[in-house]
Each structure stands twice: as C-alpha cells, then as structure tokens.
Image 1 (cartoon, helix red, strand yellow):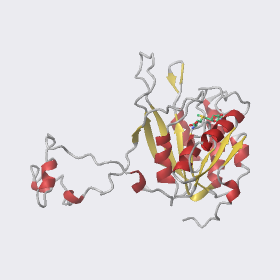
Image 2: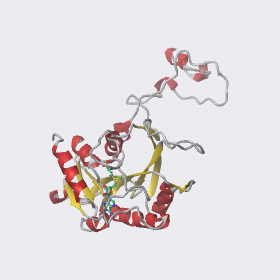
Image 3: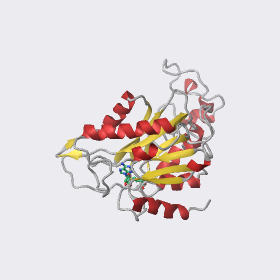
Image 4: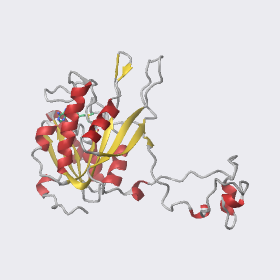
Length: 292
Ligand SMILES: C[S@@+](CC[C@H](N)C(=O)[O-])C[C@H]1O[C@@H](n2cnc3c(N)ncnc32)[C@H](O)[C@@H]1O
C-alpha cells in the first residue's frame, strides 16, 4: 500500500499519558493508518490540566497550536493515511467564531488535502434557550489526507439506496425500473434533452449507494465521563473507510477511549494519547471490558 515499514508491535495498543505534541514526537514516522479524533473545542470545557488545549487567549492561537499537533500526526501517518477531525463551533457574545472552518483552512495551508466536510447531525442534541438564531444540532467531521493516493474503502460504508416509491409524483419515477429496458428516456420525459442514455435499471450499486456527507448519529450514552464522548457509530464509519483490517488508528485526544474501543471491536489496533491520567485510566478500564 505505501512501501513503509511495518509498525513495531511496541506501538500497537498503547495509551500514552501526557501532552499530545510531546507524546507524538516519541513515535516513529509512517506507522499509523488513520487518525480519528475530537480535540477540545475552543473555550468549551476545563479538563483540569495545565497541558490542555482549548484555553488559548485567542482563536488564532488555538488554531495554531492544534495545527502544530496535527502536523506531528501527519508525520506518523503512512503516506496513504488520513485524518478524521471532529470539531464543533463556539459563540462568544452572540458571534459565531467559525472555528471548524478556521482550522480546516489552516490545515490546507499546512499541507493537508481536504477531501470532505461531513456534517455530523445530532438528532438528540440538547435543547437550547436561544431565540435569536436556530439551535445548533451539528458538528463537522473533516476528512483530510496526507497524499494524493490514499486508502479509502467506499464499499465498507455504503448506505441503502433511496428509490422512488410507486406513488412518487416525481416525473419519470420508479415505474421505469419495472419495464424491460425501462429508462427515463422511454418514459414520460421521452425526448427531453436532459436525459442521458445510461441503463437506469442497472445504475444502482448492489452494495448500496456511496456514503453521503450528512451523518445523522445520536449522541453517546456513555455517562462515566464528564465531557463530550463521541458516539461509537461515528468512529465506526471513519475506521471502516479509513483503516484497513489490522491497521493502526491514532487518537491524540483519547478521552474516555471511544476510538480505541471501536478499533478493538473492528479488529484494528490503536495508539491513544491523553494529558489527564484519570482519563487514561478510564480508557484502559473501558478497553478491558471489550472482548477480543
Ligand atoms: C473532547 S475530549 C475527547 C473525547 C473522546 N473522543 C471520547 O469519546 O471520550 C478531548 C480530550 O483531550 C484531552 N486533552 C486536552 N488537551 C490535551 C493535550 N494537550 N494533550 C493530550 N490530550 C489533551 C482532554 O483531557 C480530553 O480528554
């Protein structure tokens, strides 16, 4: 896949406790297949550590520090590797800061290739008291790669096709598919110059349609942690598409260990980093409960 050396076993399934940047600097280059992570959001929570990211004086300083940590992630990624970065925004006195996109653009400037901005829609997001704007019920997942050639298993995360119902009022609807050689070209819209001559009855991929960029996934129910734990399904999507079986996923902001737990379930290995010893312990205990 990349021509890089196999990852030494010493770096498989370890949790490193300390500052992300410093711990990443200990790792050899080109050993990780994908990074899946949700860093602390700007001025959102206090993780009670002097090392913590997120309490910089300005958004620009936050972006700069995060980009530096992620550059170290890029060094340890294999050439075909990728980064799935989960980020939410922040309001200060009614002003939306646009932080996810500030980070994404800074990452492009730093040499990453942005492949997709995915909306993580949270159908069970907390209600809010705001009356002057819509209630936010989404975050971003940015999918970025190190190189032009990269690992992406589209088949692993296909979703069901949405077909027209028989009652569909859409012109040139489903009835075409039940007729021999049925195509929109032979249907109501016959003669329209907008129709191409493809075989519409064979247009559907047997494994489902390609994954879309809006992922509706409820918030996690894991309650031991006092901070935002992301849902396992979110990590499942990223790992199935971004990490080959027995590959390695890195999470430099491991928290309660969700990324590592999903990695073990999907028969991938992990490297986790967190600066709070209690969270490293929590992740270790959570992992002991995962059968493998
Ligand atoms: C949003 S939480 C991650 C939650 C995680 N995705 C989960 O599902 O449990 C961010 C984590 O980053 C850690 N953190 C903050 N600053 C850090 C730093 N400089 N180095 C390493 N970890 C850091 C925090 O302790 C916290 O556990």
